[in-house]
Length: 276
Image (cartoon, rainbow, N blue to C red; front, side, top):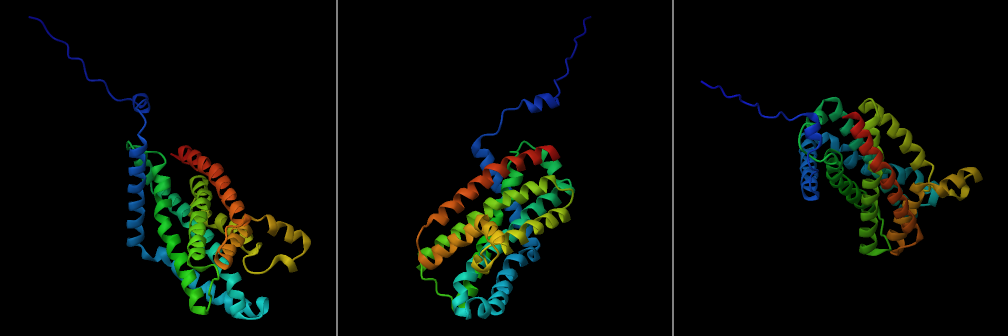
C-alpha cells in the first residue's frame, strides 16, 4: 500500500507580490478616477468642506473691494481690474490646502494601509483627490468672477480672456496642490498641514502684487514681489482678463507651474511610499 504525498500550494509571499507585473496605464487612469469619485462622495456627505470655495471668494471680494478700493485706486470701479485677479490667486492657493489635509486624515485613519493591500496604482490615492478638487477650483473661479461682475467689473479682454484666465488659475491650483499633497504625506497631523499651509499662503499672497502695486514698496520688498510666482500668476490673469492677450507673464507662470509639478510630484510619491 503506497501513500501519496500532497504538495501544498505555494503561498504568495511578499516577494511574490512585489514581483507582480505593474498595472497598465489604462488601469492606473481608471483607478485614479475611481479615487476621484470617492473624494466627490466625501464632499457630498460633508458639504461644509465646500465653504472655503463658496464663501471665501464672496467675502474677500466684497470686503477687500470696499476697504481698499478708494484708498488704492481712488474708486471701486478702478480697483476691480486689479483686485479680481488677486482674489482669484489667493482663493486658489488657500483651496489647495484641503487636498493635503484630506490625504493626511486618510493616513491617520488607516485608509491608505487598506489601499496598499489592494492591487492598485500607487499614484491613484494621491492623484484622485486632486482631480476631484478641480470642481472646487471651478466653483471658486466662477463665484469670484460673478461677484466681480455684480460689483461692476467689466473685463476688456472679453469672454475669451476671462475663460483663459479661469483655466490658468485652475491649472495653477492643480499644480500648486502637489506642494500640499507632499506636505500631507510627510506631516504628522492634518493640523500641521494646515499650519504649514497658512505659513506658505500669507507670505506668497500678501507679499505680491495681488492687492496693491509694488511701486510704493521699499526696494528690498519690491525685489521679492517681482520674483514671487504669485505675482507672475496675478499679472498673467490681469493681462488675460483686462487685455485679452497672451503675454510674457503667462509664459513665466506656465514655466513656474511646470517646475512645481516636476519637483513636488516625485516628492509626494516618495513621501507616500515612505509613509505606507
